[in-house]
Length: 178
Picture (cartoon, rainbow, N blue to C red):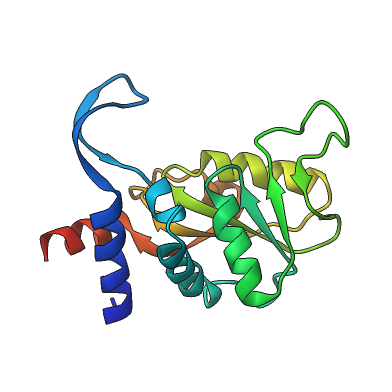
């Protein structure tokens, strides 16, 4: 890992790894919690993450698809850095107004690179990729800030979506130790 990425991992970990008593989605209680929105809400950290993502984008990317909710600020910053248009991908199409799944532009016939904050199993990315493909988009890559998936846990290979990450959970853990 480069010095810049090591520093980024350390700064994200220091900012986002909280100590205390936290009720997890699973119902378990933990003495530690990773609050990803703390780096996404910090403009300097957000810019550093998005800057590190620029080189991860496939060359044929035509549209950035920021996944609701955590991928939206990253996609917005990445769009600003690259000049690529961004769409904001809902978990499900809204049931009123335009009834769109992807807000902000058309995806039909375009190469969309998905943007996500954290990928663990890839479930949200999987669902977004399938839904966007049904609307004519070409989706084969997700770029994420942090890949927390364990070997074999990701559902993305089954739909031929590659994951490109700035950092992994192991990078964050190593930065906390070192």
